[in-house]
Image 1 (cartoon, rainbow, N blue to C red):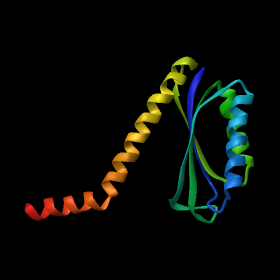
Image 2 (image 1 turned 120 degrees about the horizontal axis):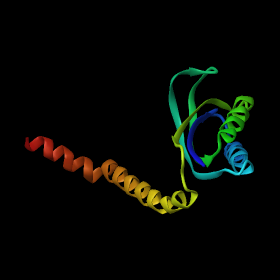
Image 3 (image 1 turned 180 degrees about the vertical axis):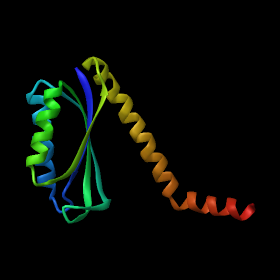
Length: 139
């Protein structure tokens, strides 16, 4: 099996139910063709660099999955036909991947994600900002 990563942008005015429907649809395409979804990361609403289909913002989603080339072709075909999808990009990460090793990576990725979230929260906390201000005043 090959490993792929697809980043796609959903219209920003989509409701939670529509986002759930999009997730179910695209994950179903992958699993329906004997693929495996390694991760599905909703990154949230962000500004676009330029307007796409008259939209200045979009809801970013990153899906990491395993499968054959036919899975990618079918997934991209479904994305082209879905009006909720503004843009998409697929990248092949590896030619040969063992599904068992990808399953073993999941706990590691969760721990790393939690560490970065904690670090970001600490950086944004008022205490951290005060200590940064004090450090710059001392210089």
